[in-house]
Image 1 (cartoon, rainbow, N blue to C red):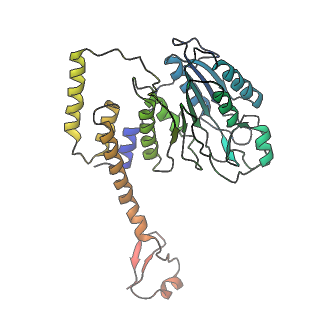
Image 2: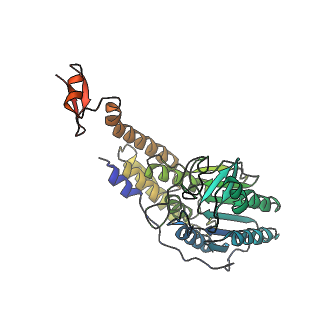
Image 3: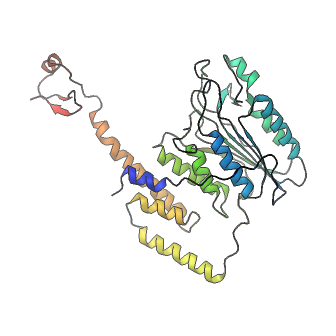
Length: 358
């Protein structure tokens, strides 16, 4: 029998911290470049995890052979300098694959998205434009570089970015279309906010590191699993989102797995099919989570994700049924309120129990 606690325990596999490489780290693949920014130390609304998230992502990209520029708690001048430096670097002809990752506060204003430096003090909409980083500045840098693949990852939709000094009219970030040859990934759907997380990493980046670490995995497949895991863990409160115009398959660890021998490949296929045969009729969510952990790119991975989503949706509906059944019922707290009820009325007593007046 699947319980919420056991299901979340099956999902919760926090990846080990990866060492962050400082500055432009030496890369094993000179065609790949990444800029990683994590901002936590805000004056009015500090965050817990963006620094940890940036370290983990910088380590991941460095391990995958990217040249990485990692910035923590960047000021406006620091962010502008990093983006301008990044823009100049990606124009080099040898650069083919480019990643920008940002964790921290972000807001939308007039359908434009702004990333918040740690020194931004904002009291009005005009100051958002003056003191924050317009994401279009980054897109302009990318647009000036031709024949590249761009991946932009924004874990930037935390709630209440300015504390009590200013409240934006709209929550989260605004969706915008990915330029040709690029993918833009958001920690949550447009107009919503993302969790900063209760552990070492934010909910989105925790799953992102785990799934992108899988060898020989297309980034779009990894992001599908991230979306599923985050949606299930947050009980639907946070649903990651992507917009893409990629024209070819993109891998973070593209050549890190040695070619299997014919015997090894046969054993892997047999193990996949055997595990599928064991769980294919299961009604237990942990079985499907376990399969996807063992075989993230298995022959039956898409079917497994579909069945897991169906099981969890049914479990959520069942859990919500008792709540729905009591909606609209009067709550009786005093003897006078009880006396005023007609006979036969179903009501809720002060302890929360459902009763019927006889």
